[in-house]
Image (cartoon, rainbow over all chains, first blue to last red; front, side):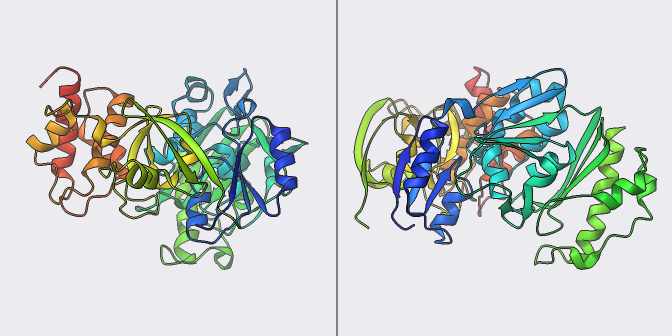
Length: 264
Length: 162
């Protein structure tokens, strides 16, 4: 890892100011992707601004229709939260199956979605549940947040404060995971919301996306047989040593069907 | 760039420690090289193998994927902090009794992860739970069977059973 200046800040405004003053600063959340990336010298920020001391970024609040999770809340905390387990069990289950226990003790919701790894789990839930990402300066709809591979709508010095997930009538997440890394080779999140059935797909393409073809085939009904005839564009799928594009297209359908069945 | 030195203070195995580290110093290197606590191992250095797991404020953490400065003010427990003199911790004893190791390189991380598993799941652990919970710890010798048995036995012994 190259040298850098480390600063720990206690407020969002101090973090933004620290980043503005840095040549090439980066925010550090749980560090479970960023530190390995820096060790590989794929990133070499001049300044690392640690967000872990900012109290307002932590915690979980649940109301009758929304669960709001602070950006610096760890995957382990989301998984173990009685509020999340009760309101959106599929979200608690998703968080509890990211990486491994030690990674879940450090990795955070905000870090995961800000990084937007093509195979990360949380983006599928943010999209399917129609979540809202609250930052230090605005609110961004989940549908507009993920813009490309490792790219988001966030500005360079913008900090995610929390994510609000509307409570769905039913939801399920099914992941075909890489057996070594536990990243999603394909993950499909299906939610029956006040806005109809919404589907978020991760792992399949360079950036998590909404499964509009799948949603159209379901036509508002949680009937997995309706997905049999869906044709998915193989040429848009990722292809790597773990799975070919054809295999991923197949997996999207299989995971979507399983998730639909699990909603019933 | 000039090395940016930071002072860190933390409690390790019940004792206050301090040191001067570069920002980029990983926690595992601070433990091994500054404190000479070499029981915590570096296996893969890519946050996959779990040989470097320690407890930070009671939770299992891969110490190769945390900066030493991030542990400033924290309470840490490493494998060296478990035995009471010559009397092994029940989880260590269970690994010995069940032959839960061959070369032993992964064992410190296995045992520290096992303590986190017991903290979260209690003393009566079924095999499937232990296997799932050990996903972040890799052993290249044993095939895991005796490790799983050791964690189950150690968990029981920690609860006062045998």
